Length: 244
Image (cartoon, rainbow, N blue to C red; front, side, top):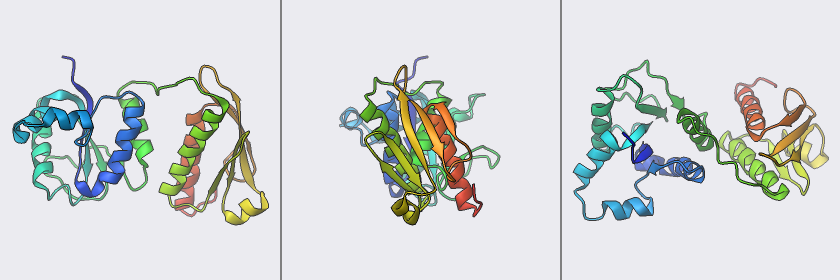
């Protein structure tokens, strides 16, 4: 049967800032999301019995439930209600329904320890949204870009990853491309960086990367996702104190 939502989001209020960024990225890509503060959903829930309405949504209305696990999640009354409703659906299906994203190692009764999860401590909200889109079998919404939009979009995504990783890496957008430096000192000297240029816009932006001691190699005629995957690896190595 056709579901009303592609995904429903179950989380504690303490993680709202993170989850809201996931929601924003999903909505930008036309994913149908149940998120409690969406204005249309607030209107839909207005006047309803919340206990029954949420039970129906988390049990029957979505293709997947993304469960953001934390110690706060395990303690809240409403998240426990959402969890019970989601599990009652998961127990009756042979395919996965609950997609866990963990903020910590809190044990959630009913959630098998062997269940594969994504780690919110190393994955940015953008990464979670990207994985969700792939899980659904959808493609990112590739709108028609101008050169300025293509460069700005990639720069913002790179900055989001760098900021989330609390890296010293510096991202600088210019009129013609993006400069990446390992730290402020390199940025001041414009040395040992990576330089990204947009080389085409159809059907989606393509980029050339001239690498000087940031990425692992020069990249030619690559998509946005290729560059994001590359910086993910660099940041991961950085966190492990391994030079890329």
